[in-house]
Image (cartoon, rainbow, N blue to C red; front, side, top):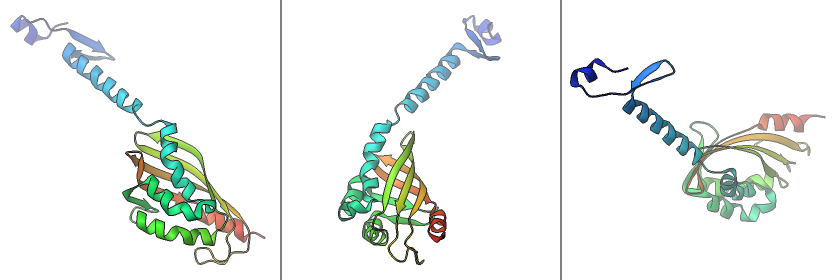
Length: 183
């Protein structure tokens, strides 16, 4: 098939028909190259092993067993500009998290946070985690009864240069309080 312009100029143009769409060979090649470029960039995303290597020190910092090393573990695993957000506008800086993590460990002296699943898209890593612990006294301004909890967390991390640059997180604290209030 040739176009009227090609007939007028006597220049042969090769037309390609694909999925009901007719396009010239140059356009078809451009589409193919763009598709290959997209596919290769998607395959260039970080591996699960690389993601876990970037995240492991951070999740170690969330465990009471590592309370004395928690600030340094956070420093190792995050960029200087890292922020962690529990809502679109409710964010804390790296320095704020490092200063406050000891208080959380004192409130839950056996706190343990585990990575249960890791999903990766480009430089974004989603972690489904699980936290367990038994609060000692008040937790988030609420009296506790000595019972333990287990909660699920979902964290969306942006990784830059092997370090966490931004985190959005959601934890089921309501479910944890429900567990602790049961008789």
